[in-house]
Amino acid sequence: MKNTTLLLMLFCFMTFTVAAQEEDSIQSKKVDKPERAAFQSGWLIDNPTGLINSKGTFQFDIQHRFGVIESGNRDLLGMWGPANIRLALSYAISNRITLGFGTLKDSRMQDFNLKAGLLQQTRSGSVPVSLAYYGNVAIDARESEFFPESSNRFAYFNQLIFTRRFNRIVSMQIAPSYSHYNLVSPELDNSQFAVALGGKVSISDKTSILIDYSQPLSQNTDNPGLSLGIEMSTGLHAFQVFVGNYNGILPQRNYILNKNRLSENQFLIGFNINRLWF
Image 1 (cartoon, one colour):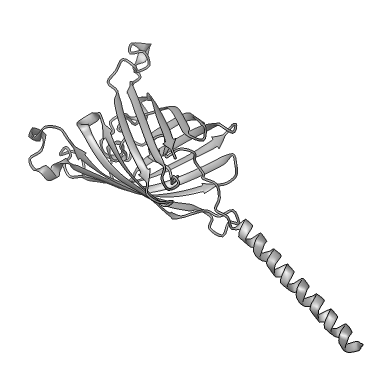
Image 2 (tube, rainbow, N blue to C red; image 1 turned 120 degrees about the vertical axis):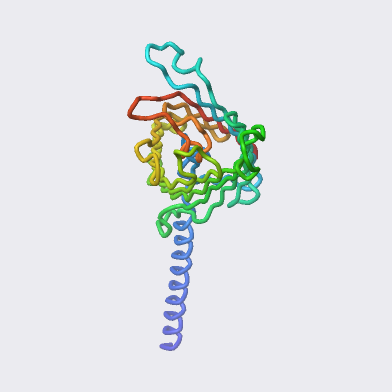
């Protein structure tokens, strides 16, 4: 009788232990799920975000910058001035890699770009941030008279994007970068190190306030970029309208060639539109 009682007690204890371990394992798996995306668009005004679309997703971008706003409203808030526009299409070949192509009005730049997800923030906090890489190679398609050699047409951009979603309201990212032009004016350096800091504050399920700050580090350090805007998004669309001082659209153009100075209040109005197809 005693042996039977001991066996029953041992069996109950083992059953309880196994059940507890399974429950802990299930809870651990639930907690360690990837965190939701920090941003709902592939762009945070002038800088790419760490958002990686799911495999098989097409993304179409329309990025537009009006002219610099002149005093006295002589140019209808820059809308009558010279504008710049970029159209782009990208495709997610996996859940971690996106390839794309874009065409820019200024200098007829054609860019081939890649975005890759390297780390993903988890809900448990075991991985506190997401990390992505964005890079492009751009080709100036103007007439050959502008270039002594064909290699002078090329410009490059590389950026690491550290992103954190703090909660459903606040998300931030910091992104160090390296830009390079094979040919620039004599007063400029070919290369530029920079860092961008930006964030999003959601004021509703579909509307957010955006801020994007870009600081050159190796040249033009007194000419940073600052933009403030609003984003309205759905599951398939994201529309951003903002005021800032960058008009290059391509990051390397902004960091090396920007001439609009914050100190002189040289601001312009711009917008970004993203459309997704699954």
